[in-house]
Image 1 (cartoon, rainbow, N blue to C red):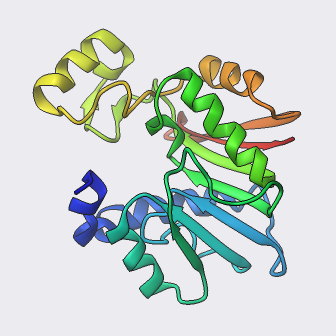
Image 2 (image 1 turned 90 degrees about the horizontal axis):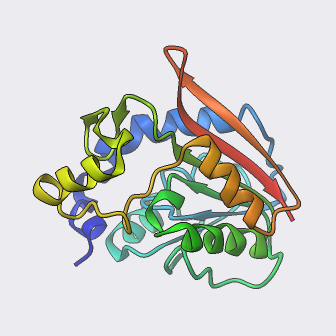
Image 3 (image 1 turned 90 degrees about the vertical axis):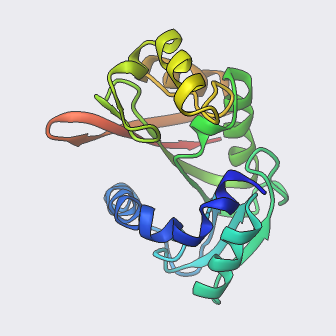
Length: 208
């Protein structure tokens, strides 16, 4: 059973407020029309899929989270699939969206591949990811330790053994820009989402 299968029972209670705030921020930057097709990559229980009033699709590797998505959003279409291998044809979607997934897919090469997969199936791509240098690391609740990779992963090995560099690789703005330059995106924009004046997350919009 995967980590997300294990936490599926309380997933919405744990993440609802955070996810709804992110969607509200994203909607400031774009408008999705009702006749358009949108794919949510790493959709979980559909928390970030349901708010879009369009033809909604979602993929996730967790069977239990997808069961909840299908139950709560009968108007959407949900498939069991890993984020790194999107089971749709080229340019099938008007929009491809991913909320805080790219930091979980692996190393630099895996992250570039992930962006390219989203670009392959979508005409427009937008995704969010946490900022490495926000004082609190949201997955582990540590303060500042994540600013130093060696210290952070050493601490995780003892206290959060699931949290390896292959599972969580955070972005500075410089590294995020590097990933995007290596990708197939013809153009991209990076928006800083701030909390108390500090950058907390990034929203990225890109097209091929």
